[in-house]
Image (cartoon, rainbow, N blue to C red):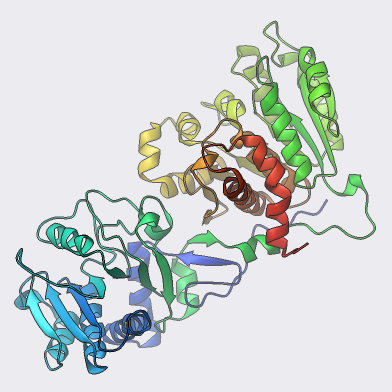
Amino acid sequence: MRFKSNALAYNCRHGETKDKMKLASATQMRKIEDEAVKRQGIALKELMASAGQAVAALAAKLIPAQGQIAIFCGHGNNGGDGFIAARHLALNGYQVTVVLASDADDLKGIAAEAYDSLTKSSARIVKFNSGLCLRPGLVIDALLGFGLKGEVRKPIREIIAYINSLKAETIAIDVPSGVNSDTGEVANIAIKAAHTVTFTCPKIGLALYPGAEYVGRIHPVDIGIAPEIVEEFATTNLATEEMIKSLLPRRERETNKHRCGRLLIVAGSAGMTGAAAMTAMAALRMGAGIVTLAVPAGLNDILEVKLTEVMTVPLPETKERSIAAAAVDKVLKLLRNFDALAIGPGLSRNRETAQFVRELMTQTTVPAVIDADALNNLAGTDIVSGRQAPTVLTPHSGELGRLMDMASADIEVDRIGIAEKAGAEFNATIVLKGSRTIISGHKATMINPSGNPGLATAGTGDVLTGIISSLLAQGLADYPAAVAGSYLHGLAGDIAAAAKGELALIATDLIDCLPKAIKKVMGDKN
C-alpha cells in the first residue's frame, strides 16, 4: 500500500491557508518582521501604519460613527499601533480617548513618531490614574502586545483590571494584554477581549488554553509581509477543516476490504476488555476494511460477544490474563498480512507483558500506533527511536514524562517544545493529548482546535488510537494520520457534547458520532 507523504502543502496569506493556519512565537514573529525589512525593503514604520489602520477599520465596523472609543496604550510598538488607530478613528469623527500607561516621554522610536502624529488630531489624551472615569462604547487594548514574560506588573495590572471592569466590547491588538503569546498562560490577570486583531499570522498562545478563552474572535490581517518569509520561520500550525478534508482517504469505486486497510490491534487484559473493544470499533468506524483484535486467550470469548464485525485472535496469556511473552512469534506471523498495528490499550504493565511489547516492537517493521501501557512498557528503552517504520505515539503528559524521564508538570509548562523534542528524539510523530492536543513530527507541529472538556473521561484515548491507526492502515503516513485522526476525534466529541452535554459524554459516544464528524468534514449534507 502506498503511503501519503508527510508534507502538507499550503500557500500562506493573512496567516490563514487552504490547508491550515500558520502560528508564530514571539521570537519567530520578530524574525519575520526583521526579514521583511531586509528582503522586502519594508520599514517597521510601514508595518505599524498598516497594523493601526486595520485596527481602526475593525473598530469602525463594530461601533457607529460618533461613538466613544477608549484606547489604552503602552510605551512599546503595540502602543504605537494604538496611536495610529486612534488618529484614524479621530479623523473619521469618532470621540477617541487615548489613555497612556506611562509618560509620553517614555515613548521611543516609531511609537514616539506615531504619538507625535496623534497629538495633531482631535483625540483626547490622558494618563491613567485611579480616578479615571470613562463610559466608552468600545475599548482597544494596545498595552503589551506579544512580548510579555511572567506576571503583569503595575501599572499595567491596574489598567487591565480597569478595562475589564468597564464591561465594554474590547479589541485586543495582536495579543490580549496578560496572555503569554507563546504558551497561552495567564499568570495573574489578562484582558478579556471580544476580538483580537493579529498581524501576519496569529501567535501560538492564542490557540492554547487558557489564552484561547481570552481572545474572542481572531482577525488575522495581512500587513504586507511576503508569505514565503512566514513559511520559513513560523513552524507551528492550527488544523483547519479544509486541511483535514484534503487528507482523508477516498475509496475507489472498484475495491475490496483488503485494499481498504488491514489493521491488527494488540490490546486488553483482565478488567480492560472495554479498552480493546473501543479501539477496534473506532478503527472500523474510521473506515479500515479489516480489523482484527489480538487479546489474551482467556478474554477472547468476552470480546467475541462484545464485537460483531471485528475478528479476534487468542494469544498466549499470563496467569493474570495479560499477554504472555510467548505471544511474540504468533503476532509477528499475523502481521505479515496487515498494513498497520495498534498496540497498548488496556495491555497492563505485567512484567511478562512488558517483555512481549519490547520484543515485538524490536522486531516488527509495520507502521504502528503505540498507546497507553505499551508506552509505559517501552519507557527507559531506545526501541522506539530505533524503529524504521512510521510510528505514532499517543501519550498524555504522564506517559510522555515516563518516556523522557521528566515530570509531567514540566511537560505542561512547554507542551509544544517538549512534543517537538520528543518527536525528534524518538523519530516518531507525537500526539500529546490534552486541552488542545499537540501533534509534532517530521519537523512539523500542529495544534488541534477541536474537542471539549467532555473528552476528559475514561476510554476516549482508546478511541483516538483506533481512529489514527485506522487511517495509518488505509495509507496515510504517520503525521497526516495523527493530525486527521486527532481532529476527527475532537470533532466527534464536539458533536456528542452538543447532543448530550459535556458532563454526560462517554467514550462510546465518540464512536457513535464519528460518522457525523466525517460527513461534516467531507461536506456531505445528507
